[in-house]
Length: 426
Image: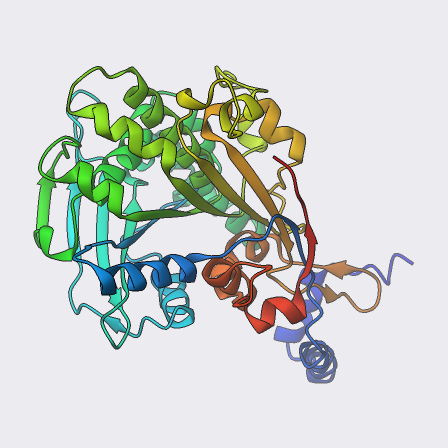
């Protein structure tokens, strides 16, 4: 039995070392598995949802009958690890193709984020791209936030561990794993410390810039803070639709930012905020959380001030309805069961731990974004790194974001390849 349990690494070395017959057999087995019918699981549990396409359709209808400048604005917030501007390119390309937005402005616009009194240097980079359909009747602005430069400064404390002085003592596989740990795992720890404020400020500033107006209202390059009360931001916020796409740690960052932003709006007594304070409680905000980590990142932190009162804040007859932050925070929690860093959101979690004033409504999507393979008939294995990162490669994920589920325009691939358990309730 010990001979049968040969480590996979050893088998790979045998393949490389010249045992061509063994290599051929193993390679053929893998290819045969790849030719099999794709049976990766996809289970959706939650209410019917319409997706981003419905917002674009509503925009098109409204623009045709008035002088409306309504725009759909989507903000991408990354998670753990170092990122550079442009990291969302593949996801954006596939999503825009699914939404049939085949025209893009040639150049993007860029904002270096700042918030005085929070962080001495830049808070990150906000890249804005514009997508349209051929008839120019649908308009989407995609905002890509890169905030990882905040945590990269903190990681210099352990950068010595990636030097040759220490790496040469490690095996190749373990060395690669340690490099990943040094690059990615510190981020949640850093977020729980002093860096939390500037990271939240980067998202807060990004959202402020999202209220700037339409494409023509942005300069090609901006380096400075955003003032929510300047210009026509209040009216633009009322007209536009907003959505978030997050990855891993980004889920926690966005929820905390929305809560903090809403709390400040409720507390502010400035006359300019009067109308703004009425807009957000009437807004639905969809958040598509890829590799969701909300339950994990709830550990060891101070609980939300208002919990267990969703019905009182969110129902039409709720006695605290006038104090809610949003009309509905629609959370779509994507998680691959083989991802060791991702979690579903149980129904009780939203009630017990999320701020009730956000009016959260959760849809759980348990989906295999990477295909498990059989290790010589002994066991099944799925690459946990791919399970954490490969959502942008999965057509079902993109289709669910674009078209939702339980609607007449739900994508065929979702109808055929995803099982849906509809939930109902207040």
